Length: 441
Figure 1 (cartoon, rainbow, N blue to C red):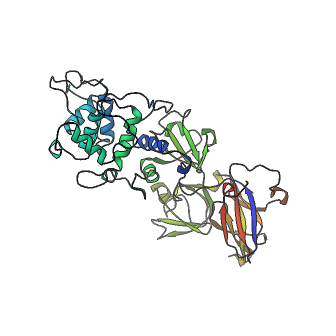
Figure 2: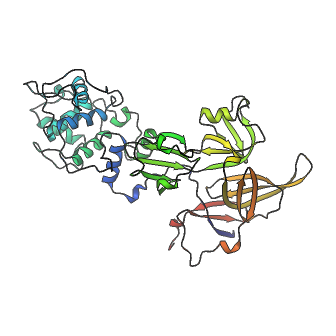
Figure 3: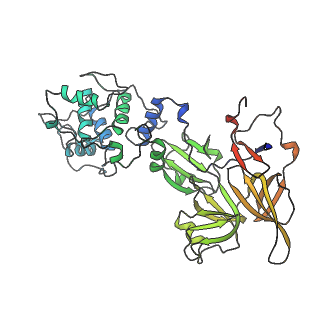
């Protein structure tokens, strides 16, 4: 039987993939709301309030339908003329109403009016949504709106909407309508979300995770005072995640890599940094696409990082560098080790003696880190396999220290929010265990 060693290490956890919301912990309506906000179809006020009980006007719905279409990024900034006599060219909704009418999604009234402030009824909204799916008046047999409402129901557009003909739709109703629209079939049989370039989950609904990645702005590297210039919305009410954990704006630090979504008023920051010797470039030093640092290969994802690690760039083979990693573990930027003080925690899983170029005897040790990766270091001292260590770079100098036994304790102590457990056996195999996966912890 393998002997397992449970080691508690209190240190920052670097999460290599985006973990925004645990959907098992939120209800369906929260997911619907987040998705529709992320799509930019509906947004809340400055504090994110959606006012879901308020009715929706015809002009508001005109904007929503355009934001749910392939034309959402090509709306003119302003209108040059009045489309309807009750929609002047300088009205906020004029550009959306004009585009919706041009696309034959919306129609006005016989008197040449649009009645923008009238509340929209179920049958009006359903008809507009069906037109966005490619249906025309000639596709419906029977009288209006019975045929349209029958199709609306058969496509599943009515899920979680309990209004009937003639009733006004609330913002909550519209939120559900547009969420349902994304997983509905168009006239030609395609799922509507896929026509916008979005992916579907296993249950046939729009995939939130891939949607989020597609709609994020970034990456950006935080300097000492540039966060306000990066983020285009107020930081006061922003929702912040750092390394996959709910956080606050004060925790974002210099050299963090950040992404944001303006519709959600949310920021995702990543502090993962790789410090080590620049050992190799692939395919070559003139134009590297990946580099080897601390015994592992990392993909260069930006022109800045590619240039810095090239023959004409800032760093050369043998230099000690800091790789700044983004949400997917790729290199966003590279800085000198002199600029960053960084500490890792981990367990030594192998140690081999080697002779350096100058004839000195050193140890090549491999450390399992708390982010689930391993890193290789050449170290002049001697540390046995199984030791809990901290790896620290200060002013570009490497220091590896054994953790004090008195600091490796569980009894009567509360876990910090960033505690991680490494489960290691005598063969050097390991896995990361998070405290919430352990019974009674």
